[in-house]
Length: 114
Image (cartoon, rainbow, N blue to C red):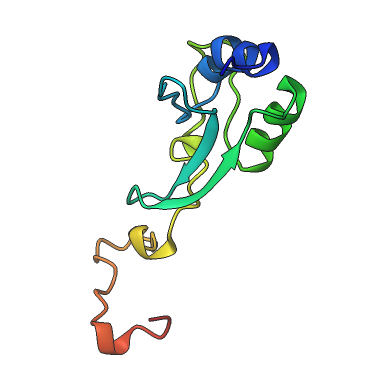
């Protein structure tokens, strides 16, 4: 099974530009995009073999991967964990702490959003 030149070009030239996008090469397997959650649970698999390089790039960006200008370009803070959508529960609300008091600690029973 030969990989299409389109997919090969994406793998060699585009993947290094995407933050958090890694290529795991399985010999003889058709190329697939496997989406993982923050906990590395598999969300879905998208076969790439029939897609053009342009389509794959579009797909990856629609999924929320951040494309850098160059492989070494810095990644903006808000894209550090892209494409995983940050879970609100992992991010404690940053209350104003100017008065020197610590923000209130919620017990599970008191949290309205749980």
